[in-house]
Image (cartoon, rainbow, N blue to C red; front, top):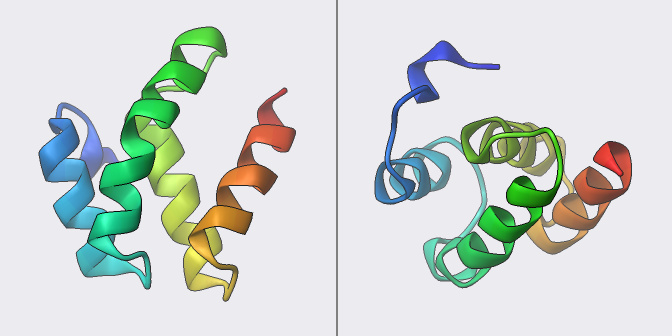
Length: 75
């Protein structure tokens, strides 16, 4: 994981992700509560989830599909 993300608030994570990937801000703002809920149930932090989401998005996968792939990976 990118150590730069540790300690960031959700707002900072959203801005960082939108700056470093093709993820749209509106899409991520809508998904952040679901991300928090998922991370509360599984051993992954929100920052790590966002990092993985950005990596998948940058690999050419749309954010929604990337989120699904990420959930399957950690379940």
